[in-house]
Length: 230
Image (tube, rainbow, N blue to C red; front, side, top):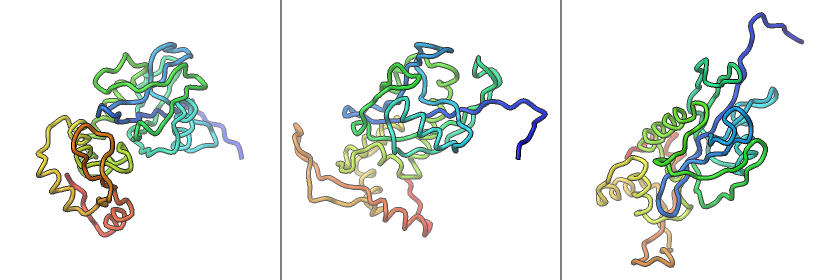
């Protein structure tokens, strides 16, 4: 059945703010350099128009893979931005997502309407196209808030990590120093980390014990009302 609508319909896009943590413990986001107008040559968040036959999340995952080569990552819907003049081409509403990855696990490859894909430190971003600076700030605030009550930070780490790396992650994202003793006491008391019979290798200091996040145990505890809070 076909329908005729009396009112014009705005276009729908998706945009992705993907965070990664590098080996120097620098929080970064993934950007693409546009090769189409408007804002040709300017850096922007990965994203694009939603196709008729796909869901919003499918569109976000597709655009992310097409423009950067990144796929199969944690993505969560962030916010909808609908300012009337946010896109000079037309009336465009964008549904945004934020994602978290272990930066070292992905090889970037720009295709479709992106000339290049690259990681940029969150505190040294270039001028962004459209309203993408506002979108980035919204995503960063969400990450800072959610990191305290859900274990999403483990998505930024390798599967095996020392406690010092976990603490450093929280300090970088939250922008504050944490007491080492209290942090370790809180995280170990939750009993969500698996202590491995392994230690760091090729480090210039005393090798630390490695741990792994127990995702299955967390999901079981969550169903029983467990509250993750740091």
